Each structure stands twice: as C-alpha cells, then as structure tokens.
Amino acid sequence: MAAQLLVLIDGWSLIYQPNSPAAGHLLTLSTCQPEDVEVTLALPGEPPEWLEGKFNLLIRPCQDGIRQRMGWEQRSLPAMAKEQHADLVHLGSATPALFARIPNLLNPVEAGETLHQAGFYSRLRYALSAGGMARLAGLIWPSDLPSRSSATPVFRVTPASPFNWFVDHDALPEDVWRLDLPDTYILYHGPCHQTALHFLLETFRWAADSVGEDYPLLILGLDDAGRERLPALLAAYGLQGYVSALPVISPFSVPWLYRKCSVLFHPAEIAPWGNPLRNALAFGKPVVAGETALSDALVGPAAYLAALDQPRELGAALLTVIIEEELSSRLSAEARQRAAGWQTETYRRELGEVYRLL
Image (cartoon, rainbow, N blue to C red; front, side, top):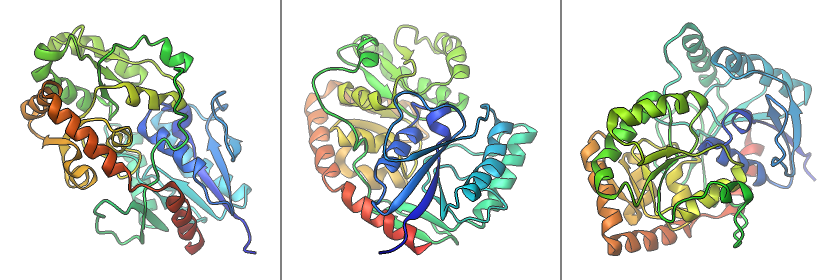
C-alpha cells in the first residue's frame, strides 16, 4: 500500500472571508479529498463552530491585512508545511511563497482582481507572488473550461458538484431564517472591491426602476470596508431600498441563498474554481453574467450573457430574464442539464492522481 500523502491547505479565507466564493470552494476541496490523503487546514485564527470535517487543524494566529497576509503566505505557510512534514501545499490564491521548499499546487479561486494594488506592501506582495508562481509545481484546472497557456504543468480535473456537502431539507438554518429574505430576490456573490461595486450598481440601475421593488439585489460577501461605503454608493446611484448587503452567515448556510434566489447576477469575470455561476447552475437557477471565454464555456445555453463592458446591456439582460418567465424556465432547465456532468467522485479520484504525480 502506498504511503499516505500529507497535504497542507491554506485556510485563510475560512477565517477572514467566510462568505466568499473562495471559502465555499475551500470547503468543497476539504471535503472531497482522496481516502489516501491526510489533510491539514492551516488557519490564521481560531476555528469557528461550524468548521468540521475529516481534516486536521493547524492554527497560527495572524491578523487580517495586506502586510500580515503577505507574511502568512511567504513565511507562515512554508514553516507550517515543514513542521508537518507535508508532501505539498495546496493553494487557492496565486500567491505561493518565493522560497518554498515544498511543492505548491494551485487551483485558482480569484478573478478580475490584480494583486498589484496601491501601496508598498501590495506591490511587494505582488512581486514575491510572481516569483513564487514561476516555481509553482502545478496548476489544477476544470476540465470543462479552456485553459490558459502556461509554463507551469496544468492538470485538468473533472469539476465536483459545488456545495456537495449541502444538506437539502425543508427547515431553514437559523442564520438564514433570521435574514427574513424576500420571496423574490437577485443574488450577487462576486468581487466586492470598490471598482466592482461601482460597476455592479451601474449595471443594476438599468433594471432597478422596473423590478427593484419586487426583486431587490442582495450582496453576499461584502467586507466591513465595503459595508461602510455602500450607503454613499447607493445614494449616488439612486438605489436606496433596492440593494442591501447580507450579513456574515455560516458558509454551510450559503447554499440556501442560491436555492431561494430568483436569479444570479454576475457582471464580472469568473474564477476557474468556486465561481458563483457554477454554484447557481447546480441549483438550476437562471444566470445573467458578463460574457468571457470562461463564462461562455461554463454555461453554454444555460445563462444569458451580455458584453462585460456594457452596463446597459447587462442591466437589460437582467430585466429580460426576470420579466420573460418562459426564458427564465428554459435557462433553469438548461442549468440542471449542464450541472449533471459534474462528478464529485471523479473529482476526488483525479485530484488524488494529481497529488501523486508531484
């Protein structure tokens, strides 16, 4: 029998961005590990009550912030991997340590944002990560999406069903019940930095006057800074009463927000893994999104795509899907058919094959 592999997974998002798409995919990854793999989740803070599974927990306290996260990526993760005698480090963010001695494997869960932002530590983090990417051992890519050209070995893996750990029953979790969700709503679960929020509101305002009262836009995953900016942004776009930010809930309750939404709106690029479009398709939900090579390949006829650089077209597409019930029903049916090809057990097996190759 082959020796058991030891894999260290970066669990940063579970502590500091628990409602992000990245955190959702991290839970999928953690619960779909091959049987011959021992997984340790590296966390920068004490684990929340909802975090449980067949994995070990390794806690190395680290505050949130660009400088602190850079230290986590460049020093803490390599040190923990060495301490655990890990065979490899599995990352979701394209920020591998520059001087890591243990192989780093990446499945990208970020899109539409660059690490190279304003500020000294942001620029330094970008530079160090770029050097680490040049030494990356492998890149895991969904088999149903076109892969980019890369000097790094690319391993194409059949996607697992997102939220494979979701328990579909009639009783709402308490934290979802307390949200008092409207009967119909539009869900946004994408990037929440300032530029993304401006574009989201610019696109939504083209539909809001017609459907905003009956179909409010709910934003999931907004951080504290975004919540502080949101009231002023809503006033600037005239969207008060039509848009609101959801509070932080357990990631295990996030699937309920997809299950109950009327449509997913995503006027942004998507990441290869953990993206909201795949989540919505899994629940047979209509999707309106920006058209890119990745989104077009993922959804096919199961979504209404519009030019990503045309806010008015995206808003009009959203309005069309809400008003035309026949179109909405057809997209839902196509979504269910599209999601039927995702196989969790195949994903588990193929992931194990990649691990053993490194």
